[in-house]
Length: 92
Image 1: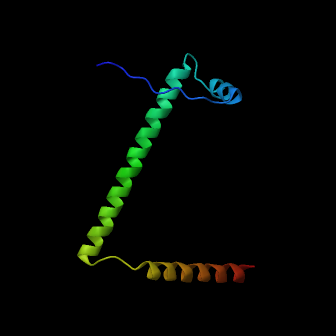
Image 2: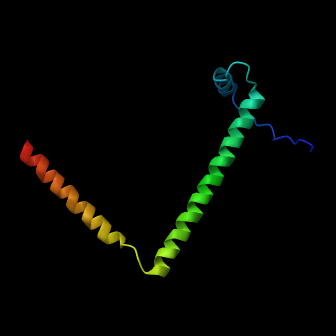
Image 3: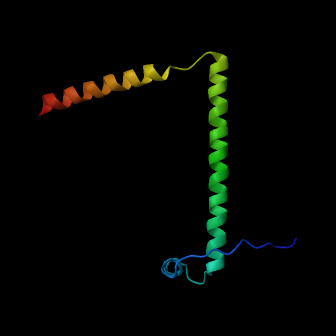
């Protein structure tokens, strides 16, 4: 399989020096850039999969008729927060 190149990018000289300053021993700038691109691609794929699974879970919950309304969850959390504040006030 033939290899391909990623387009070069222009950066300020100061930034290039900053990047070169964090290279590991023996690591080239090309290796660093490839690693950064691979990491970003993987991160974006994971984010997309997370979103897909979340949306599928929401749809399944709607179909099954389960779940708790957001308003009910927020109200319960607000009640817990108010109770915690009262407890804190009593201690002080």
